[in-house]
Length: 284
Image (cartoon, rainbow, N blue to C red; front, side, top):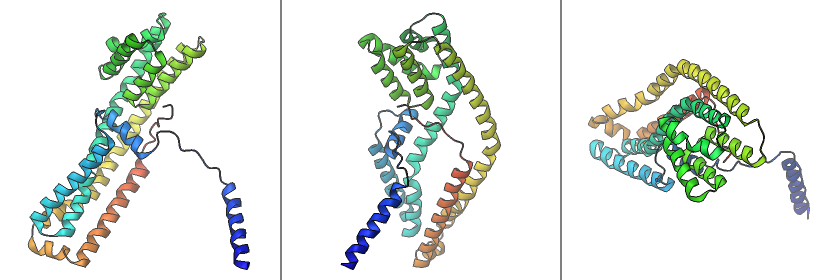
């Protein structure tokens, strides 16, 4: 009986403790799968699914494992490079997505200026968006051309805006689209002022981010070189039989595992410390 009372008392204390902490709802689209799906669209690979990326990671790991084992005859060394190769497809997708977003970050102010000019000239919102397929920046003409085709075919402005947001997978595009949607639904005369304010904010953010990235670029490059250096040396030395035999032992495998853990933690810490805040897609 005393055990039951103690368990009930402990459960009550646990419930009281949990009630003191607010449970924040996870925003829609913040899962790893959703972030990877956004990265694939931003990288110009909208037809590639997340499961395909997982398959490429496994395929890269198996291929490198077989090649490295054939070259070194050491399973721990081959497994180490296979783990590194497993992350290569994800790293390539994220690199392409980051470069694409950096390029878009430079042209978004021009897009907002075109929209503000169209609204000021008396164009309707669908017309102002459709004209960006002709007058807008080259990098964004295709999504706006698709919007124009969808709107001519269906006439459903809100559905076409949702498709436009999905194609772009960009937080700035989400902001612009929701501003236009809200203006169309509730009306008002402040849309032009809102767009001009957004354009000024985007230009200021671009200037500040450019200065910060220029200052930290050499630090990030040095950290990446420091992390990759030991593994490059290991790849060169692993062709020697005595090196391969040394790392084939239990002690050698532990050294590789410890080195991999330290390298992973150091690279993760470098990214966390030197990372600039990115816009998050909250207006999906």
